[in-house]
Image (cartoon, rainbow, N blue to C red):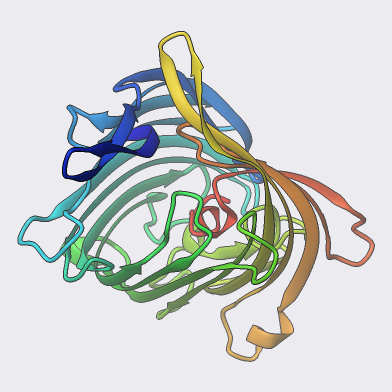
Length: 357
């Protein structure tokens, strides 16, 4: 909600007064929406965003992106209160996507709807439900479960979340999210269970000062059922590339289950600070870092360890409004693959949870 928060003191007759000066973010920001995926490349288009919709701290955006893929969507988040409360927080999103799936080799047209509501049970704990719907059409047979090359898949999931991070770009605290979902509810043509576990730990580096920090993350997904029978092939996981295991080619490993691990060290070149151009205000900063990734994807239990791959490297990241983070990385991993230059959008621990990476 704010681009800056400044604390100061001054003497008064009976003691000291604490003065808090805040600068509110621009309520509505016309901008360019950008997304970078290794599979479909760079997308860009117009967007309208609000980081403090109607002064309620709600976040909303409408966007249309074109380029490597076409994405049109709307997102809205109404945050829950920070302590135990009967008030629920809500997140709603819908988007339409047209793209080429380079990994399987088909043209996809899909519509996705997501709804989440959650309630705080403590200042850092939340519980709630998530509903998802996907309607996906393919231009060739063998991709969908349905014989008409179109799948309608709905799911309902229960989740528990812990979030004690200290900032948008955290240097201390935990983020954990565990969700158990049933796919195939409400008559859709899939039938499987899915367990997702996310763990992220942020740590200051003792003795080196506040500009140094570590970020550790783990993301695992276990899926029941059989590919092509109850689980569609378009939901298979592909590991390797900018947003999973850097230093390896896109889709170096594949399977219905996945396990991704990352360790990153970051040095803050410039703290988050307020920037202003005309009437638009935002926060931005810069960091340098080094990282290591380890991950695997598998369908048969015997392939879990055999499919394990790793990569490492160094990079630079820039924080921007709406996008949050742009990552510029140099990575090495695959034998004979050389050093790769990679561009990613969003924090890697966040980007690896997306279906299109």
